[in-house]
Amino acid sequence: MEIQTVEFSTARILASSEIQWESYLTGNMISSKDLQLLRRYDKRAQDSKWSLLEEDGVAFVETFLVVLRKVSYQEVAQYTLALIKELLDNDPGRAALFHKTPSATQGGGQLLYEPLLQWMRADRWHIAETACTVLTAVLSARPGKDATTAALPFRSVAPSIAPSSPSSSSMPAGLPRLPSETGEPFAIEAVLAALIEWLASKLKGDTGSSTIPPVVNSLSVVLREPSCRVLFLKHEGLVNLAAHMRAKGTSSTMSSTLPLDGDAMFGSSTTSSRLHIQL
Image (cartoon, rainbow, N blue to C red; front, top):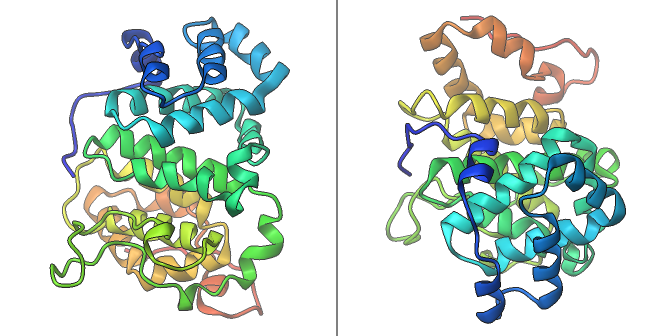
């Protein structure tokens, strides 16, 4: 993936782009209801957007997911992800809306999570980064998360990052494999595994400086779940993270940001001390 040096921001993307939503109705990618909702929401002042979300937030979020699922143009995905990030930045609690959508309630959530994983494959770093940020927020808000993650059988989950061997897969290394591509029934642990492995892969080698902050931000959320910490260790995430911290001299900042609980990661339940990386 090419890491672009051009600086993007949510506000800049939303202000500088103009999406012709009507063309996607003509192409049968969105429905007339989707078009109506997009027209009501897009280019409105933020206060008006927040009022619309209070009125029928689930419907608007579902339409954004439909666009991400049905429209393959990167410009449209970038814009739609910016709309989603904007509403989450304003109120992170809105991530709960995603779990009330038809995409979340049908098929065990596959229609909710796979479009975000799909756009993490984009060759534009800003799109992949924003899709990862949104996926992290949505996963963190999933119902029953605390009651289920401790029992997730991560050690039995097949690798969800495409292997680097050409003989085993034609997909480039470091891209998240969609749960639907594994041939297994959809399960939330496959989504978590794909996210953690993707994040760990971004810490390998000499990645650009623009890559590390969003990766660390996502890790600071998902590593609150003990099973995700185990998977992060499995993919040498901690070793590679320490290397970046050593190179940039940011050990104190990152070690206080990341919830790296040594006992949860290594299987002990006797204490709950935080694991600090000593460089």
